[in-house]
Image (cartoon, rainbow, N blue to C red):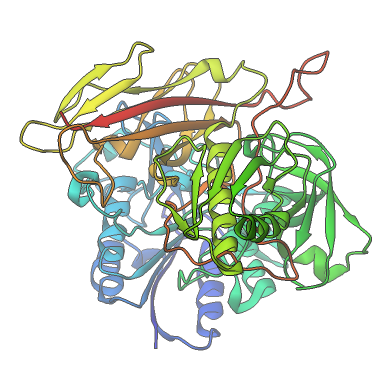
Length: 617
């Protein structure tokens, strides 16, 4: 049985004018909720007020949470003050570093703050052992805190000069980027790194907006709550309470079950009810272009409940229920949805060759909204069905694919799934805003390698070369925000194996106006051939580094795509939708812009792409 090791910290009494009122209430409510959870053992260490010194908090993390092993959970819940200060550290894209304020941090001669890099490194060391690690931080500036009184009151204090002392161990990721990405903690934060977190009288007691909303969401969603679903409910509730000046953040897998991290089958898109109506977290920056698209709810198989897009924004879209009337329970919850009827051109597939195989594949393609055999302006893909029961797929920009078996209906479904996978990958790679304004103000650069050599193509794209001794090239990658506004950025790595990684380089964070951020927090990026590709003279691989920027956080779950594998099972079909249910249905812009320019709001996102070729000389 899983054991949840929990360190629950609540600090109201800082022995200064910076006293708070609701943090201990938050901590006690969190402890009560945790003790009510069935199916797990509890090992809870509460630290309140004067007991929550920096030494005690560090000891609690290292000795109490550090007891958690593989298959256990380590939970840090902190309600108290947060702080920040400006920094010239190139790893901090916002230009600020954040910290948690312990009980003795505000007192003259007290301990220094618990800084972001120190805290993040401690939590990630525990996660590296196979423990599921969760940090819930209800404090000001908490969105960056683990990078690593009348009316609402902010839980933040000024970063005072006498706190500038040793910051402890910051730690680095083992391996320098070579090999599997190490396990990391999940962060649920009360606000963005540059924002204040607030507390107020809620239900007759002083509580933090975030803690109150989080526990309410967990009770609403029950034991199958995912991090994405919880965050969707919490964000809307906190924005409503705060007048939309406080925006909770989630850093970690959206499909992971709360407290366990177990990946639950779900769509990358979620539907929720907000103060402005119904909303799906799919917008212009995901490729959605116009009203009229439909999403189908997946929580009632065979129910066929649909919503229709009425207004598209940069990060999300306003929708309306079609043919059904939502009840109070629908409005309280969050619903997984999948695109079901969209106005995007599918890939235009040509199938030639052996007649029986052509019929099998044509039937499989007919059920895929990402594919059509009726022509059109979509991505041209070609399948040649050979007499020996094979299918040769061509037309994608990635590596050549091996011949696939095409003898049965199951084989045909697998080939159609391959075509849909390639189509989805191309849609992400080719994602471009028809309004180029913001795209012209962001860029990606690759530094001179620390290992290996760098040349450039005639178009200026970087070519990185292995050393003569066979070592992978290593170089730092930078994101540049040349605009006059704070931008939220995610850097995708699209490989020629038709995969897309949304977490390895720059998972999603703000970059200050005129600022620069470093991929992998300043550690070099290793550019190497993928597994199975032999390091011999002339071998090569291509990565498309895709930067997507918006003014607000973006749902990145739809951009996560594993590399295509011939051993992948055929896509399943269900009453809830087609075989590609849950896939991202995107399309590069087609045709010309309408007179008068793009639709309102379309300019508040942009993209940049760097094509990096890795070669063995």
